[in-house]
Amino acid sequence: MAGEIPDLVAHARTGTGKGAARASRRRGMVPGVVYGGGADPVAIEVPFNELLKKLRAGRFMAQLWNLKVEGQDDVRVIARDVQRDVVKDLPTHLDLMRLRRTSRVSLYIPVEFVGFEGSKAARAGGVLTAVRPEVELRVTAGDIPEKIVADVSEMEIGDTLHISDIALPEGTRPTIDRDFVIANMQAPSGLASQKDEDDETTETEVINQTDATVGEEPAEGN
Image (tube, rainbow, N blue to C red; front, side, top):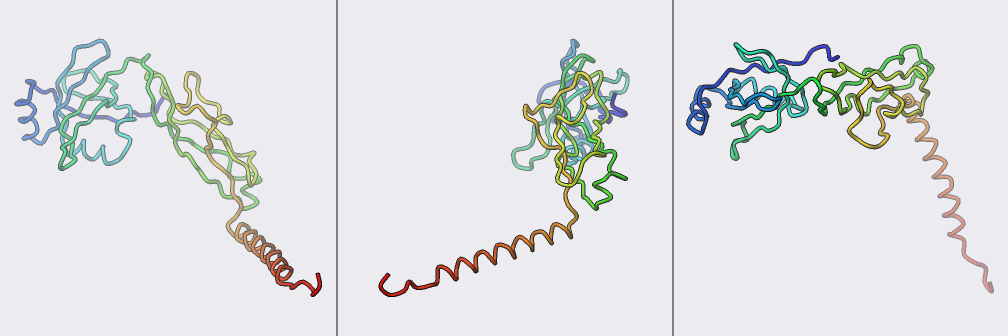
């Protein structure tokens, strides 16, 4: 279960329609509606500055939120639409969907890499590169993992870790239908640079030899 689902604080909004929405914006709010989950739609408004901050932080549409409205029970929601001003590109309306505990949703789950310290690759100076520090998974709203754990203790320099190498929590699956890369173990930068220089030297020698051979003129009469 996820350790903490971030809060999205909102206020109940009286009235609907364009007039009520304009009044909400004049108060520094972004009007919105919460629907789904077997309950009636509820009109809300979210402080403009708080919503803008969350939007700029990224992944707002893929994040599960704990919606807090005074006088109402907290509910888990996910954003389904954020309408923006066509000129200023600022939020003007928000649609949120309630989730039941059995609802399935796609969310980005962070990857925790363990076992690097003390591993053979670490002793050899290897560098672990996280290609995907988080992975989009299809999960159940009532059982969202806080993280997935990737054990890199047995990786050696040159090895690659794929999603199939990670034991995913029961009931979750990746949204991508291929065995994509999570991380790789690279050689120390000094060794990598030396290898590149050696490769260049070998290639230069071959090229020089070829140029000399090609530059020879055939003997007369041949």
